[in-house]
Length: 299
Image (cartoon, rainbow, N blue to C red; front, top):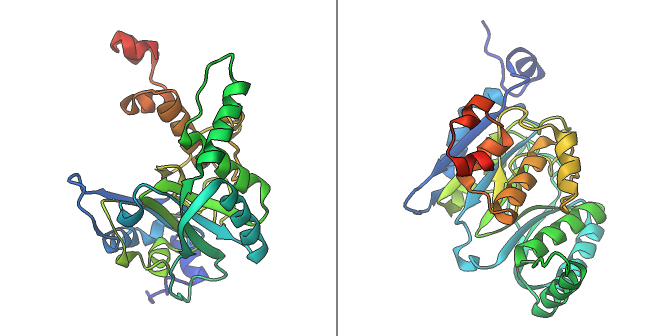
């Protein structure tokens, strides 16, 4: 049998797994940082489970010089979207540092957007004004808006209201790097071998139930959350309607986005133990529930 080039349509049609994803994750439990090359090498082993329409990485611990700042990674379609977004950023945040994210030209990575990162601190007057406003609005329920809530609101605003701008990463001391292409090519494109982190995850293949585009590739993130998964994990329409009642705007039409928002809602806002979240998102059988400790059974 003649060898088939891995980048040809013949290869895709004969060997691509249409319903599979490539996923990889590694953590140093001691919190020691290591090069992203390990993640690139790990995900490349599963090349056949990708399809060149989406690849990405999430890395934690990569910004020790700005570990207390909010690190935004943003895609822009054009300079106008960048200008509008930066005007919004300067209203609510002090920019500690910003730059175009360094990349290297890769032949198989075509038409990338403008890709920038910002290290931000909320302006005290903006944070206090919004907190007081929310306190007045929610005085009957005695809710208190946290800094994390302000970040979520801002991300939703930009992703919904500014055409051609998309915040793909908004946590602290972490970042998401993704795009259209095979994950190992995306890793080389972003020069991730030059970064060091204590957690790395990666994903290959386009997002479930949506077209392949730079913002929609996995991992999907919000605050410090990042999600990669293999296969469909959520009923998108039902859960989209549910999370919209809590201020989460779904703009991707993919279940990955919904799961990320559900994690933020259930763990951060409703304080459900992380070890119990899988029971909420994938309900056990009634007989399993009957055998649980009473506290878990009530949840």
